Length: 125
Image 1 (tube, rainbow, N blue to C red):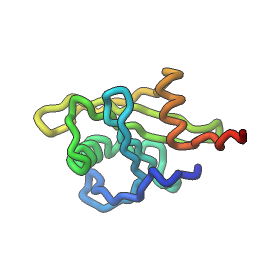
Image 2 (image 1 turned 180 degrees about the vertical axis):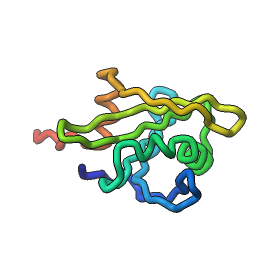
Image 3 (image 1 turned 45 degrees about the horizontal axis):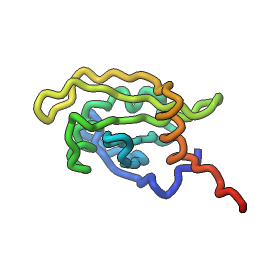
């Protein structure tokens, strides 16, 4: 997967307090703040899942986002293509709890987010 210039390598602390590097992109779409993360390929697909709560806390604070508008989206590349997973949390004050994910299947949202990751080549007029 080739991340475009909207993604920035960002160091966050995992659940053990160790620094890890993720590719991160923040964008606003339809009144929501989407923070997209992609783990390095050497990590398993559960890497974000194991660290979703500490990552959400750090990213929400880094971008100074309102938890009610915050959406954490994991970008996973598999043999059959890109998959987008929305991570949901129960927020208690500034702390995200009870992380759970679901694949984004809405065609409109999926297309909009994928356009950020893999923009279509400009049409030749």
